[in-house]
Length: 315
Image 1 (cartoon, rainbow, N blue to C red):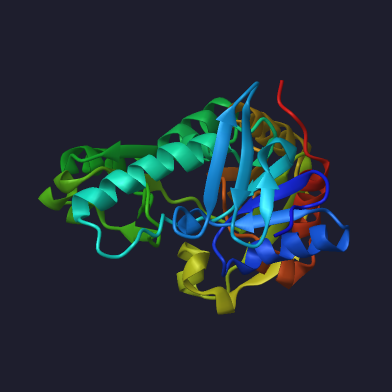
Image 2: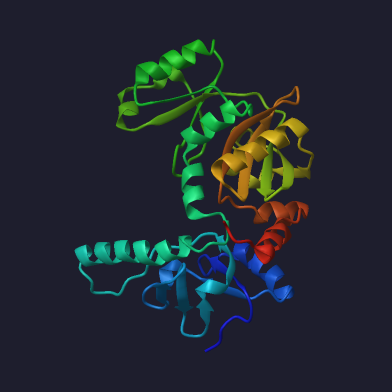
């Protein structure tokens, strides 16, 4: 059984995460020790023994390697999966064990005083779209006019106030395609949950802006079909990409947004109007980026590896 030599980067993600592989390859090339594991491996394949001293200290052990928790320089929190528990447990037992595992394993991990990309608590905060939109509006990033409601009449009134402009609806949580709607079709089914309705904004193209620390990687996304013009995620094959530049004012406001949420990484989506105005749509604090790097060559993986290699300790 071996232990990483020197301060290690802890990578928390699933075993099939090819995006994390790109970052790990850079770290390996530099000789930076990496300990990669998945929360799903705990408690059946991964052992934790942590003792509270000045901070939590101890080891993670996957049966092949061990990690000294006091020597973690940084953590890359990507796409870990839910805990895999032994077969044969009762449903009540599984719920209890999962809750205990989350409170224990994750609780110790998030207490590590090092650089996180991103800390799970910051991810959780920034994933709330209403909070994103409010912050973006206050910081001058000019998101679309929006309403969140479970009242169909309120939705229709919102649409009427737009003066006949098209209205879209998009998910507040799970990834669902953006849809252009006819407000007249809003019925009592709206009452079943919260809905986000927004004004449609005319676009010349969209921009995926990937931010890593203080480095910005903006890429124009040009839609080649009507479906992609509404939501480019519905038709990747029609898309074309071009690296671009971020206006200084947008850069300053995005940096303020990152500071407000305590983010180190963010995947921002903007509309660029025919007049060149950048309009904020949303940010995914743990968004995918590898396809952008593959298509354009922008060095996102290298930038993430740079931060993880450097690391730092929070005061």
